[in-house]
Length: 504
Image (tube, rainbow, N blue to C red):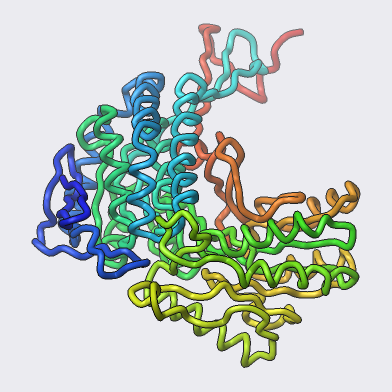
């Protein structure tokens, strides 16, 4: 299995058919702290096609037993898992900060979201409701029930390495499916910790399987495997498109949660101090590495300069550092590659003619020498046509754009390929409801930033952000189950619906 210590890095295993096992290749990969690359957190299995096939085969065998376990009994295992997460919250959060960098307050929130989701979905074990409805014929009963689908491939990103897996795995299990879980290579420790909790809670052998390693070979094998009936993927829009195309020939059920270029709109009647706080949290929380990050701020021209006068000093004063340090407000980028992406977009913004008003540079001296740190960065006087205002950067870069009116702000907000989250700051209820109606996004906030979704409501986006399915809330059950309509005729004779009318 594996454990972590400060003095030595452990080796961690895959989890297949109830056993912790090494990859068939015998190869491993390193997991290092992005705030201090000198810290080797652990060695993880570099899985191959053979390991994926073994995991899917185990899940397919386990499905035949698991689907027949009553949903309330499945839920009991999930309730136990939630309590284990509660008991280990601090240790799990510290492991998460070490491997992906965000500050400890945020990783505690990440674990808490997994706790909340697990408790919420476990409660649905006695509420997997269908419908009963009157039949149009005498002596006939009509109802609908949910049924599981089979083996689910779960492919998750690194920015919420326990919350997002919980959004997918927990409802999949409750509905009676089995799971093969492929986490991001940057955050395999949190995935290991989550699966270990499910094992200890009593998930039967083969019901949950974990394979770690590179995305291309493992992901391609998983998505294309004939026994996989559902693919749930969170990641980039480009990769999501490949997943969709790969799964389409077999008509697999595919859930995609992809990119975002989210907007905060600040009207001339907004409480600017509140808006500043929201833009700081929305733009630089998780180092901007959220699909819901507030990377665009559209400000009414009447309060544009006043907002910048308050916002920019706060951005410049943000404390960047190791997420385990309690004074740190923003951690590192996840990797060298992601840091280089941020730096490339900063150059693009400068070349496009946007005004660099804060940050703009890599931090690489003193305490930053061994990490992937970048200054919190703000461009002002940005035009909506600029790439920095249209493309997802996934880093601590915020573009501020002026607007003339609410209609102008809404037009700017909708003028990107994504449609995940949006927000407005205003004291006018009419303005708020117009924006709520007219922003074409899956999530909307009033007087709050674009981040902070709660587990009991659906989560997901429109346009290039997703393919119509939703995570969280009871909507998650629709991803991992299918409807079956059932008719019971107790008349003792042939009755033809829509032909034989019942006597009045």
